[in-house]
Structures are given as C-alpha cells and as structure tokens.
Amino acid sequence: MTGLTLYVMVGREQEWRTRELTRTLRKLRAGYACRYACEKPMRDKYYSDDRDLVKWATLTHIAMEFGLQTILQVSYWRPEKVFPHFSFMGKRVPISNKVWTFFRNIHNISRLGQKIGISIAVVDRLFNPDQRDAYVFEVKTKIQQAKRPLALFLDPDTGLQPKRSCPEHTATWEIQALWPILKKREWLILYQHARRNSNWRESVADELSSLCGNMKAHVVQSDDVGKDVAFICIEKEGVA
Image (cartoon, rainbow, N blue to C red; front, side):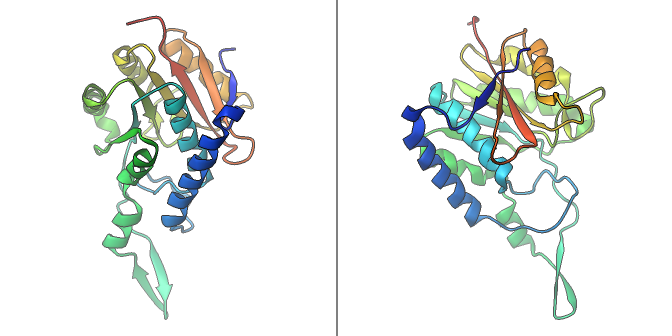
C-alpha cells in the first residue's frame, strides 16, 4: 500500500504555527460564512466549511514544512448560472450580484498567503470539461509563472476520476500531463471526496502513485472534522 496516514496537526515543534494557522483560518471562515441549503455541487461556492479548514491547514503545513514558495490551486471553477433567493415579507428576493461576488470570490484565499508568507495563486480560468486540453495548457502556464518550488493543488469537486471522467473529476491523463512539469522537491496534492468502497483513501493513493512514477503517496485526513475527504500528496524526488 502506498498510502501513509499523516495528521495535519503533528509535532510539538509545530504547535505554535498550528495554533496561529488555526486562528487565521477561523477568522477567515467567520468573515465569509454565508450559508444556504443546497445539495448541488458548485465550483464557485466559497470554501468556508470544516473541510476547508483541513484543506488549507494541510496545504500550508506542507508548504511551510518543506520550504515551498507557492501553493497553486487548480480550482476547476464553474460559476453558478442561477443565484439563490431568500424570502422577505412574502416576497422571493434574489441575492444581489455584489453580495454574491463578494462571498464567492475564489481569490479571497490569497489573504491567508499574505499572513503566512507564502504565495497562494488560483487558476481562475473557467473550466469547460469539453475543453480540458486548453485548461491543462493554462495550468502549465501558471506553473511556469509561479515562484518555485511549489505545491500543485488539484481541487476538483470530487477527486480523481474512477472509471470515466466527469466534470467533477480530475482526469488521469491530466495528472500524467502535469506531473513531468514539476521539479524536484515539489508536491502534487489532490483533493479526494469519499468513494463508496471502505478503503477509498488507499485505493486512490495507489492510483495516483501509479500516475506519478510510483512515487510514495501520503494520505492526509482529519479524525475531527471533514472525515469524508482526504488529500493525497506526492513529493517529486530523485529528479532534477
């Protein structure tokens, strides 16, 4: 098995950074907590739930621990076509565009980077699943423009494609196209939502490892929050 379970908050020598990071994340979360009931996946929904605490704690921990200069988030951004409404005095009122764009701005996460001294960049190109080639080309361009070394964070709706690729997945060929561009000491990190099988973390880690030259895949998860997600992380080793 290639998966190795890591815990985000580890090491006493990291406790002071963990506490500061947690405070920063919770402040950002509190400042942008605008929620409504909706089960439909949406790519421009502002990330302010417990999963995002684990997500950005993981990313920033790896970046600080391994001396990375940039976290490049590949957002697979797909904007909502219909804004939600709320009821007031018997009338159905749409959420205004100004409010929507303020709370759904995918670039707000860059504020976290400013606080910890690491550049956080977002690939904000509209993701069209019928034009994945162009999207991957854009990601390659962003990698080349970024400060190195970096962590390339693939952040689709649900994770790596199973048997076939849908809009909510990262396609296997995309990883095969992006992995060779990364340099030694750089990381590829994949967001993965739970699959139906009980060993989904380990199986996805094995799949990702096979796509990245069989290099060791580490599984990051939390026992406290966001238990239905994991982050599969691979450091590029042994090459220039």
